[in-house]
Amino acid sequence: MVLAAAADQIGNWTVLQRALHRGIVCYARRYQGSHWDASTVPASGAAIIACNHLSVLDPLLLIASNQRLISFLVAQEYYDLRWLRPWLDLSACIPVRRDGRDLRALLQARRLLQNGRVLGIFPEGGIARGGMEKGLAWLVRESAAPVVPARILGVRQYSSDWQTWLRRQHPVLRYGVPLHFHPDADAGEILGATRSAITTLA
Image (cartoon, rainbow, N blue to C red; front, side, top):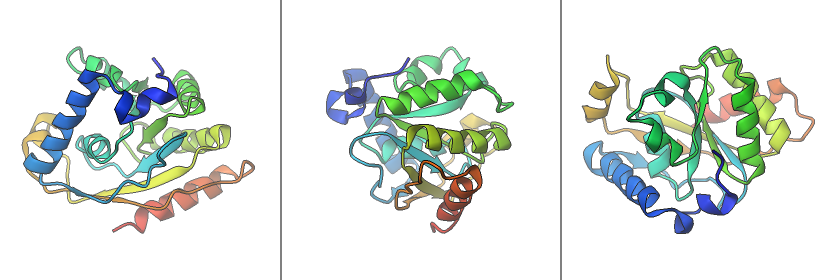
């Protein structure tokens, strides 16, 4: 499922998408006591948000702080949860195997970016790190999309996802200046610049 570019603007969201976004904003602000910078995601066109990964709260913070629909690369086992899958489908999330060798997922992500959408990715996350990092570099070269660095601070993953969602942690989300790469940039340059940009956010 890949939505048209126009559908990722908040003014074009469905009633259910708007309700879900309001609920996530309320949870992040009022329950978690979150603080976030103004998003540096471009107002239109393709973009890749590359963020560090500390807990299951991370995608919720990215969603709450943006007015565009973000599609995430999601570990297959989360996508297979019957109660969660309909909500993931609302933002055209892409299931990916944890071994990091899921070519189908990368092709779907490339198509999403070609449609002018926003992709959220956690290069250091629970899905095989090496595969995700290589996938990020490949997507940047294939789509010419800018990379928006983001860093989450002040949260931790507890023994269960539910425990993490219920604990009040007061997280902070920082955004950096979008990174634009030459079409001929190699993977090392893309990954090095992205890692550095994320690390310097504090």
